[in-house]
Length: 273
Image 1 (cartoon, rainbow, N blue to C red):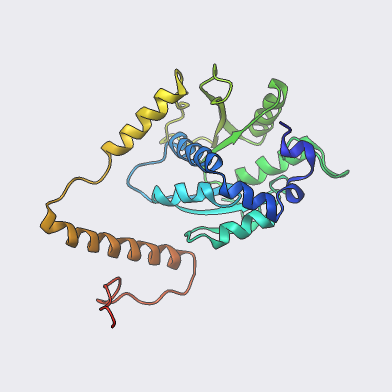
Image 2: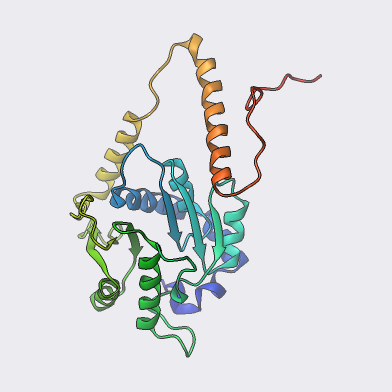
C-alpha cells in the first residue's frame, strides 16, 4: 500500500472525500487515540495540573479529543483545510488553524522529509520546523513526535536536525519486534531545566495485544468509584455541572465570549407538555 506522501502533496491528497473517509474509519480512530494517549504518557507532564499543548498535524482533531479527555487545553495546526473543517465541527475545546509545519510555526519565542515544490528542501524544512518549535517552547518544555520513517537514514536525519536546533532527548520505539504495532516516538526537551526529569521514558515491549489489555484494565481501575443508588442522581447532576463550568472556563481562556455563571448554570429545565 502506497503512502499518501508518495501519491501527491498532503494538502491535495486529503480533500473532502479522503478527510471524511479518514474520520469515519474505526481503525484509524482507535490508532489515533492510542498514539495520542501514548504521546501524553511520554511527555511525562506533572499530574493534577492542566497544560497547554500544541498538536502539530492535528488532522480532523482525533488526537485533540484525547488531550481534552486528559484535562488539557490544546491548539492544533494542519496543512489540510478539509481535515480542519471536520475538526472545527467537533464539540472540542481546542482551536485549529491552517499551517504547513515545514514553513515554521507562527508563534512568538517562549510531509517534512518530502519536497513537493522546487523551492523546498527536506533539510531546510526540518530546520525551519524544529527551530520555530524550539523558540516557542519555554526552557524545559517537552515535545513528542510520532512518525513513520521509511529508512534508518531518514530517522537519523530528522533527529539530527532536532538536536542541531538545541533540543535534547532521543528516540523511543514501542514494540520494536512487531511489524504492525511498531511505533517511533521522538521525545524532545527544549534546553536544560535542572528541576525536570531528563531520562527518556521506557519503550513498550512484548506482546502488543497483551499490553493493550493491561492498558484497558488500568483504565477501568481508575474509573469512578461506585456510589449508593440514592446518591447517584446527585452525583450525576454535580458531574454535569462541573463539566459545564470547566468547559466555560476553557472558553474564557481562549478569549471566547461566555455567559456569566449563575445558580441556574447546568440546571435541568422543567419538561414541557
